[in-house]
Length: 150
Image 1: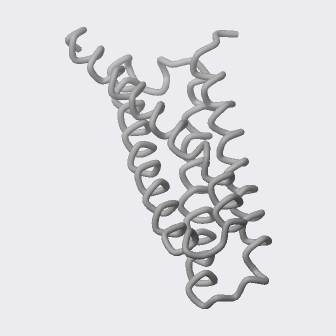
Image 2 (image 1 turned 45 degrees about the vertical axis):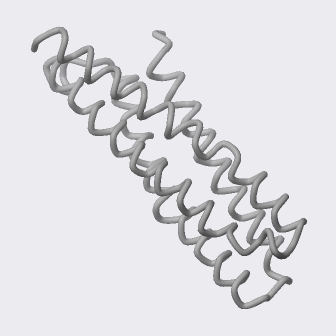
Image 3 (image 1 turned 90 degrees about the vertical axis):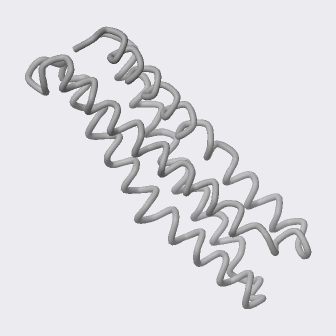
């Protein structure tokens, strides 16, 4: 493979991971603080967090696809380290957690905010914080696996 093309794929991979990693860092705090402020701040909370997650999911897909491109440019899965295998698998798990658990939790938060049911907001904020924390921890492990050679 042309070294310039490989460098471009690597740059795309780094940019995708940076957006995926950093984009969702403030979701839990944003949800808690906005719920504490109440209306009119809560009216745009769910769409704002949902948009952040959508951008993160797109960045996650870019990261995974560009990672696959680099893997195949290096000779396929047999040619890479087991730590890259582990990081790739965890990246897929992280993306699945965001899509299957975190996005629906934000959707339920939006429904609760729309209906005016204030009793469920704090537990929902805790659930969103838990799922976001799980994805942050997984992303940190992925970063360590991909960057540090051991």
